[in-house]
Amino acid sequence: MKHVIIGAGPAGVIAAETLRKVQPDSTVTIINDEPEPPYSRMAIPYLLIGRIDEAGTYLRKSGSHFADAGIEIMQDRVSSVEVSDKRLTLESGELLDYDKLLIATGSRPVSPPLPGMDLPGVHSCWTLEDSRHIAARAKSGSNVVLMGAGFIGCIILEALASRDVNLTVVEMEDRMVPRMMDQNSGNLIKKWCQGKGVSVHTSTRVESIVEDGNSLKVVLNSGETVDADVVISATGVKSNIQFLEGSSIETEFGVLVNNRLQSSEPDIYAAGDVCQGKDFSTGEYSVQAIQPTAADHGRITAMNMAGKDTVHQGSINLNVLDTLGLISSSYGLWMGVEGGDSAELYDPERYRYLKLQFEEDVLVGAQSLGLTQHVGVLRGLIQTRIKLGKWKQHLMQDPTRIMEAYLGCTQAIGHNAGII
Image (tube, rainbow, N blue to C red; front, side, top):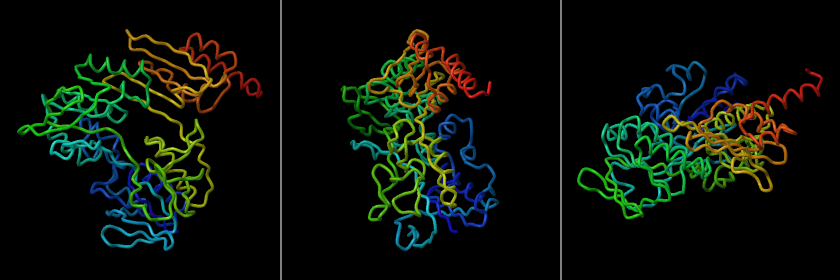
């Protein structure tokens, strides 16, 4: 069996390693379109902080890891997929046949169509090449403008602040991390960052970027102009499906798959940021661009490609973020459900926030700020869909009793099952 994987991120690498374990007589080829060995984009902020060097971003530390595992890494980019012939056309002109194909091409940054986005000194923070440009300009005392305060933007914010730059953050929405935190928690993160010396503009857009000698000027819709030595765009990502145009592989926001992560073509699968897979909480199919989902997808696609039927139960929405020392997290349906109940603890003076979302007596979502001790318990209750019974009322009165509720419910289940 000849397996080909397009993409060398976590989903592709985990799939390749799993295939070699469960089907050792197969051949596995990863097509990597970047010059470096497979690496983690999530490690780039640590590179900018100086905690690791470039080799520290590599997904596997041994230079011979892939060769030793029997995995071929091919340096090239796929131009098109000929489904009927089971063949890939590469940019180099080479043709590559496959028996089973995994599309794990990830996503790419999307920059707003503004004047000046193509100027030198304006970068995304997505590749190792990007990080080299940013490190060269974001020196101590430099003026840096970060466009976007979403999840990725806030990870980059942490790295930039550690470089002792003069940092300005511009976010279009009315709060920071708007797809992860609500108004209360998002604005507490903003206040925290401002207290650490970061200038944060919410409900604000960049209108244009213009050159001013050797530096840049960022014009905001408020009329204010901010000086910058480097501008970093972190305004969103989009699945890399453009090369599938004209093929019979069905796509929407990503590659459409079933509950085996199989595309509309039976011998082609998708995983990671490019996969429009099942959401555990909603049952709907969406792109969930987070690394835990990519890892989960990689394993499941490999099992199915190897003929070992494995159902994808759905990925849970899970985000944990450290913003200059303030830990925030959100899980599942953190924004709540129609007709559901919620319980809230709001202590802005101490930067503490906890909000639980219920559907009847089941915890379906949560978000927390400044509270880290119950992170695993929140996730466990949401994933297992344990009925809380009387414990729901306790949590409605005091949401911090989440550990008591978890122990009370699981012990009750054990007693009912005759285990305890």
